[in-house]
Length: 187
Image (cartoon, rainbow, N blue to C red; front, side, top):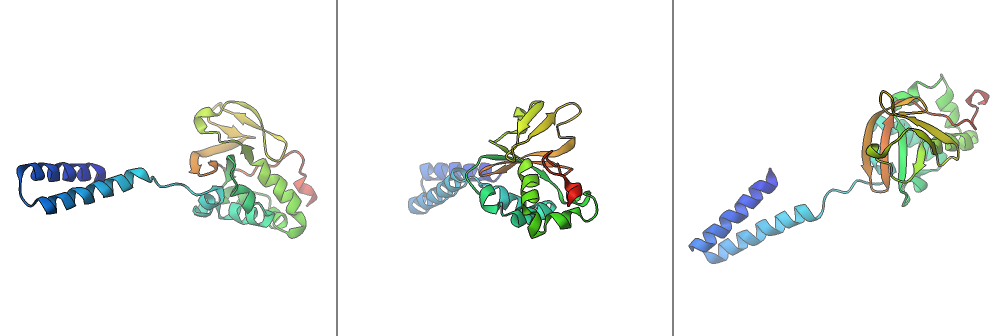
């Protein structure tokens, strides 16, 4: 709507200029409107990296804390591209009592890192490109994607898709998925 108004203003200024009047003032108005319009169109808002996008969403505060505890901030701020299946705070809250607290302990960084990198797939996979099958995670194990009755990742429901980041994309899931290499019962 704002762009249409600016275009109308620019056209009106050109018409007024063609009809005569204060040429200097009209030229300044046209120049200002044109500069404003060009600035808006030339620089669309760029999403931040995966960590910045997640940090900007209060539903990912637990995920961001886990990423920080695992020392993965720099990695997920890197060039990527990455596809992250991001569990919400509610997904972390659904873990067995005390498990999250144990995972965040310094002595369990390797386990936490394995779990978090299991949620990451190399490359930028948009929802329109998802097909059923096994996909290799950054952790090294495969995750199972199914598309019957909605997209699922190892049984976790994908509840929001295509959250843009400058170095990839985030798809929101409703559960924390655990790689077969991790035995959380041993914590």
